[in-house]
Image (cartoon, rainbow, N blue to C red; front, side):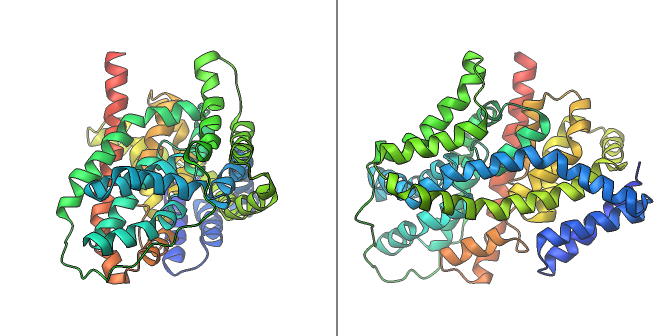
Length: 418
C-alpha cells in the first residue's frame, strides 16, 4: 500500500498543473505517476495502479459515450431551446428568477451538460435582463444554481460515474437527491438572489433571436421522459434496462417524436463530440484514482474524522467537495472521489446508492473555481468580466453546500426513520 504522503503529493502536483493551465488530462496522469513514485510503488507498480484505475472507470466511460445520443439530440434538434423558452414564457417576467433557474435545472436534469444548459438559457436571460432591469450577474447565479440542482438528479456523466463506481442503480441515485434539488432551487431563487449586489449597469433592450423551426414542447421532452422511464423499470418492476441502452433509446425516441430523423447523424456526431473530452478526462481521473485507492489516504482521512469526533458518513460529501475543488469539475470530482473513496465509504455503513448520491452532491460545491472551464464558459455566456465572475463564487458555493447538506440530511432521515 502506498503512503498517504505519496498520494497527497501526486494530487497536489495535479492541482498545481491545472492551475497553471496545463491540460487536466495530462495533469492528472502526471500527478498519478509522481504520487506512485513518491509513495514507493516504483515505475512498474505505479503503472499497474494507474491502469487498474482506468479499468475501474471503463464501464462508466462506455455509458457516458452512449449518453451522447440523448444530449446531442436535445441540442441539435432545438429541444433544449423549446424547453427553456416554454418555461420562461409560461412563468413570465413576474417570476423571472424562478423561470431562469427552473429552465436551466430541467435542461440539466434531462441530460444536458450544465455549461451547455447555461449557454442555452443565457440568450433568454440577457434579453430579460435588459427588458426588466435585472443585472446579468443575478441571472447567471440563477442559471448556475438551477443547473447545480438539475445536475444531481440527471443522467449526466457525474451521476453515471458515481453510480458505476459504487455499484448502484443510476435511477435510484438520481431519485435520492430529488428532494435536495427541489429545495435547492427554492433556496437559489428566494434566498441567494436577495444577497447578490444589484448595482450593475443593465444594457439597452434588444429583441431575442428565436429559431423558427423549434419543435413543440411535448415532442421536445419525449426523449428525456423515455430515458427516465426505462431507467425506472429496474427499481419499479425489476426489469433492468442499462443506461447504455436507455439513454440512446431516449435520444432516438425524441428524434422520432419531433420528426427530426434527418438530424440523426448530426445529433450522433454532436453528442459524441461533447462526450469524447469527458470520456478522455475520466480515463485520466482513473489513473490518479487508482493511485489514491491503493494508498493509505482513505484510512488517514477516516482516522482524522474519528479523532475529531465527526461522523464517517461525512466522508462521502467531503470527498466530492475536495476532489471537485482540486479539478474544478463536477464530473472529474465525482469520478476521483467515487473511485478512490467508495470502499471506505461503504465500509462506514453507507449504502451504495446514498454513497453515490452524497458524493455527487458534494461535487457541486466548488466545481466552479477559476482553474476550470465552467467558470470561463459561463462568464462568457453572460458577458461578464473576470472580476464580475469572481464575485459570484461565494453564492455558487453556498448553493452547492446547501445541496450537499440536504443530500446528507436526507440520508440521515431515511436511515433513521425507514
